[in-house]
Amino acid sequence: MFDALRARLSRHVFNLFPAYRGTGGRITHIAPDWQEVRIELPLNWRTRNYVGTTCGGSIYGAVDPVYMMMLIRTLGEAYVLWDKEAEIRFKKPGRDTLYATFRLSDEELDAIRAELERTDSTDRVYTVDLVDEEGVTHATVKKTLHVTTDQGKAA
Image (cartoon, helix red, strand yellow):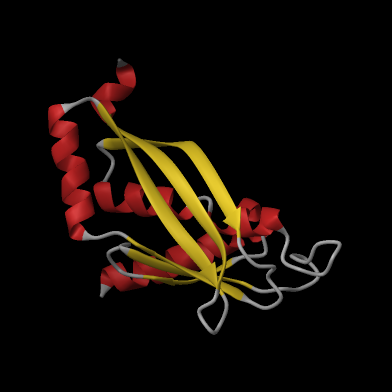
């Protein structure tokens, strides 16, 4: 119960944080274990570009910090994460609210921990689609995150 309350509070704080709020995106759900996060990005005066579709900067900005925050929360303080690389593929203009669901499996978290027992760092690639209400993909964002242990930070 406490984890669910903490996740709900985190969602509200995240949505009020000026850097995230400026993207126009909103986090609508954080699972108590932080292994699933959902966002929505409405098309409105703040997110609309010159030609009347969702601005690419809003699309990227709304998804940018999510996987990093999920990994920080699920792996714990013994790990250090950095953004390393990002790629966005626009597939269709956004003319309505777009949605994205981010997921981390137990297997992925175990794989990260196991890799970091063998080596100082690992790069992990995550992909998320922004879809409309019908499930049509409008953009795909690929994020590469660099993960190391706290000990690796000092090296």
